[in-house]
Amino acid sequence: MSKQSSKLLHIATIGKSVGLKGDMKLHIKSDFPEQFKKDASFFINEKESLTISEINHERALVKFLGYFSPEDTKKLTNKQLYTTIERTRDECHLEDGEYFWFDIEGCSIVEDGEVLGVVEEVERISITNYLNVKTDEKLVEKGFAKTFLIPFNQPFRISVDIDKKVITVSGGMDILEAS
Image (cartoon, rainbow, N blue to C red; front, side, top):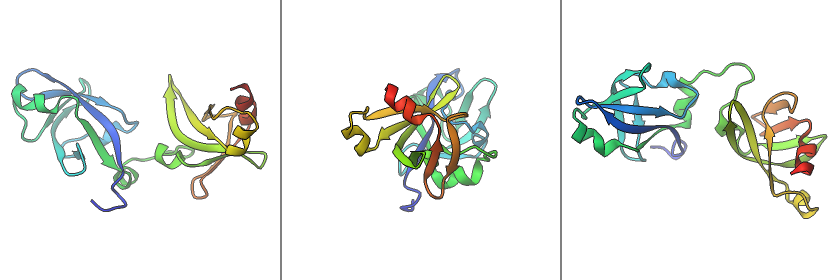
């Protein structure tokens, strides 16, 4: 694996064995279930991968090449499946105004020209995505919270520039003051 693709993204967790023919539950952690298809391979660590031989999306069941019995599949229970950022960019289609979470992480949060902080991660609570923001040190020194959450939707999100790693918001300072 190249250095550039060495960051692996957790996209699913393998559950328990179901039945006697090697079927396993698949708990998808991705917004792109279409990437889980016959002959698709995913990493379970930086050196090992698994290839899907069959998938039933309706029942969330999967079979992997080389795993045919409950005894074989028990070794895979609770293993996490990973993919690369590059593969995600190539295989997963975004609509206008949608962004990969890994592109959002690390962006500065700016309101009225003032940097409020940097996105540490994106969290989904119910159906809303929130930016978990590490507050800028200058604001922390003034007594503001070290971190805060801001919804990643309208009316809070004004603009996103992934190339410049800047998200312009409205109402972010109010949320920070209330944190």
